[in-house]
Image (cartoon, rainbow, N blue to C red; front, top):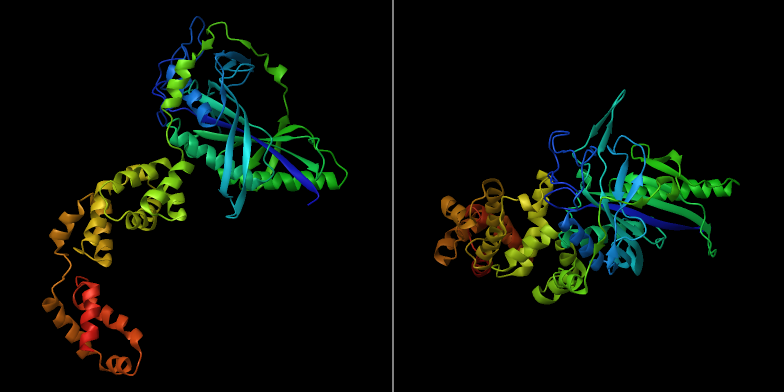
Length: 478
């Protein structure tokens, strides 16, 4: 390859809190536009901001989870720019003294294309805390501003330019999302704008140390969009350089339908924003004891949980990867595993049945009608041979719709597995009598036909017969 990509990401993550960053308005998604606002978040003259302690602590928590150094002394700054999404024409942010700096995220696993990536560490330059601007919606002949989002606590997580491919960027975003979810910092729902990404990318000839001129791609709202935008921009910049052109420092947007970036504006410099300390907000200080208290409350992260699930429950690495892909899925499994007899079968049911049905219904696992306790009970009914796997799927389908307990469904529908040989024997004899041609083939050495007879017996017994007992009786009678 002639050129090497140099990629850094700026990721904005909304912090989950009850109220906004500097006022008591609810931090809530989906309300009618401009109904969750007050004089503070609208920047009325004479109002004073009050910092949200929970948002500050969760920012420090994010820093500790990404191995950052935590500033003992920090402050808020005013970032001035004139645009409709800022009612007061400046954003309260942080400039030279962010809460967190010099961190790292360790990559491993698969990239977007499914190929295994080599282990690599991506540096975190800084994590600073600010307020989100309003949400602008552009129509054909007008634009609308919803200030409900104005003032929502927002972290900006800035990486070092350590990524060299779209796959590495995808893996970094995936790992960052996991950390934010497991740390109880944000839900990271990209459809709700809770996680947004800007990409900085430049090219340089392979072997060159100096960076090339970068372009910034703004407001990518999905990991796949970030991946596609990086691949497109690599192609665009390499074509420019090959044809004697120059890459200009500029801000570009991403058109997902066209599959290409487009010019938005030339890049502003930091001094354009006229940063200065916010005179209405005191500096923020932390003691060693306060930081250690936050550190002591840090959760288990996905990588460590995956290792534990394999060692403790005998799951495969694939199972552990799927179950820890989202915090809510991991929480569901751990809750169900407390009462499930066979953890491996439980994992199979979550991965193959529950997640598929939730995907079809476009539901999160936290919204599932099938509670962790009820799924564990269903698995236990299979383990105890009260029902077989085929009946279990029928019971599960009922559970998914009705929220009912599996044992109650089994009793209601009379689905208890028949494990009495005298009750199964008539079905076995009827299956043999009904299929003389298959009996002859079996006697001539086609022993695989035993499964055909099992199927016939299961049909006759309406799926209730114990499969193992069916096989034993068939072999005896044949």
